[in-house]
Length: 233
Image (cartoon, rainbow, N blue to C red; front, side):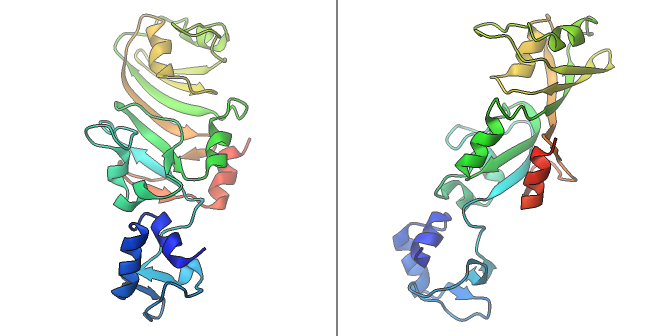
């Protein structure tokens, strides 16, 4: 791939803008030598304004999404893309959220520009466990664990029952819930079906991956070993 197209696809600007970056000498190699648009250079050796070139297509990141942030590119208010380098939202292919966490839910959010990986993660066939810590408005009734594990719970407007889910009661109004699918607002709707209301919701794990020391708003690039951990049984 030509350097202009490569750098433009990573979100640094339009092809015309990237051509100007070459003319201004802003694109160099690791030794500071100015590069030209027709040069043949390894990705890792390219610098833009002295900084390493962003990762190529296949970028996957783990983000600690705070509450009050929306999983969207265009919605009003604070967006997950505001927590990342601004050019990340302009990558081609796009860096997409793997599923969504609603505005009032915090925790682990995966993002990738690898469409095959995205579909592998969200596919019902993967049955990747997703772990949520829940704080409720009312005391638990006591039968929620059996109901959620039954595989018979039907949510409003749904045509098929939920897959069995594991509920570990932590306190009168706190619990840890493990899901193996991802329906719209599923955790909140499950507790609503029992007459309760979720006051706080946090996702701590997806598959074998956790937040691993990330603070709210922080992110890290995932390596091949992380993806193996994600799908580890």
